[in-house]
Length: 120
Image 1 (cartoon, helix red, strand yellow):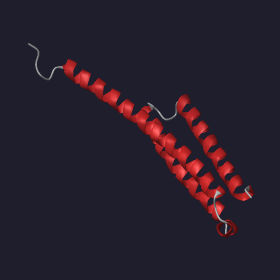
Image 2 (cartoon, one colour):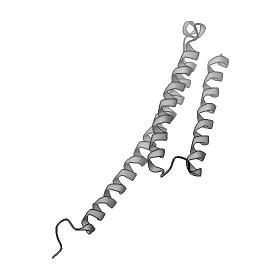
Image 3 (cartoon, rainbow, N blue to C red):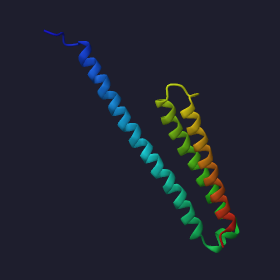
Image 4 (tube, one colour):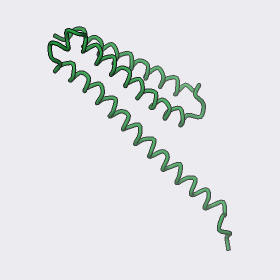
């Protein structure tokens, strides 16, 4: 007879916990991507439908800046998920992720500010 707390059962439970953690991480990454796209699209929609009084007082710029801050928070949370999975934060894959993340954040910031300043 095998003892109740043998290594086989603890290894199986560890493997199942790792699978559950991996599925949860993927789910959270998808949720964060959806939130980022919703913030970007929502801020553009708000800027397009803003009345003339708010536009003349710089309302579009405030919406763009608020969206950039929220996108930065979402990016930080996504980076924490990626860093948690990586063994070391100085690996080539993590550096590629950081470069991609920074370029997407800068591109979205430029797009939002340009939309705030150049929309009719």
